Image (cartoon, rainbow, N blue to C red; front, side, top):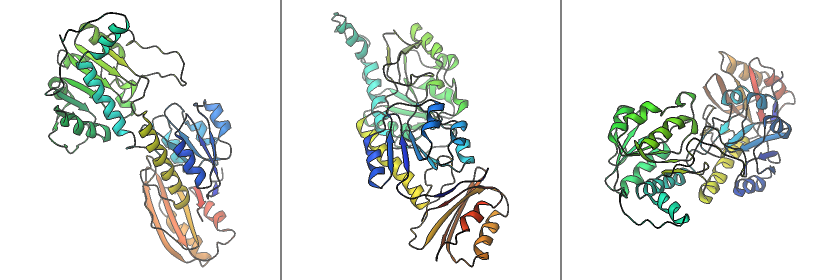
Length: 409
């Protein structure tokens, strides 16, 4: 298959799915892109059909960008995940086709943190249970079992962007913070790092999970972990549904080992609003169930709608790949010369020399060249002056191990 040659300028097609905030569409349109918006997710076959002629795809968490989708979309140049997670995207398939993927690692952090803190307070004060009783017509004002969160020990599993900010906010309201992460992380404020997961589980009153979607995190918290937790602990999961064994959690809740839980994510989630939903955690009075809305605030979605399009357009128009989750990260200086040419290739010895030989054979003066390699591919940007020879992109594309050639301007 001949690698694609793109001339990526404004006016290209963007497909936005799953009700992405209007800020995103407005930013693309104001830059001259043609935007199609669909409020729902699409199946694999539907997505392949809709991606014909599309340069940029924007999704949230329900649409799956599979290898088949990527290989069936030769015009696709970039994918934007308008959320934190990217496990719904085949990153390796995108990489193999020279398609960088960008997400929003910070934009909804505050929304998730506020929801987690609010749920901890609701569970400790038995607010959820008392509200349900009132809706059923029963007045129960007793303070038995209702506790303040000040002085309680909060255990954060996963000390990334969300975990670290939750650490700061929780400490500000008087909680003692402990955390565990598989990589070394700098403690913020007075937070205490735990050397093992077991140490954290044995120590804290509240356990909240904020890990990523890597496959090895499946059933990360199960029956053994619940047994280790303190009697009457509170448990939250606002990360990925499959990291918690839901049957084991139900058993721990019914036995009283866990006093209450708040769950925002599930192993299987409906694709559209109004769909039926089933979980082993339903119909328990001490469980708050929410439909994956940790980051679903107007502020967060607007921030994401601003952040991700800017990253996508910065790549399409200038070649920058900063914060791409699957591509070598490269931040380029502004170039006001004649042409900027992108060459994506498999990371094999000697390919940069072959690229430069193409330029040398045509007497083209290179004013700047930038290379970053990683994950099996190389990403080289070449700035040149003068007119672009008619056969230049063709010859660059014919270099062995070339994945994609793009002429930015």
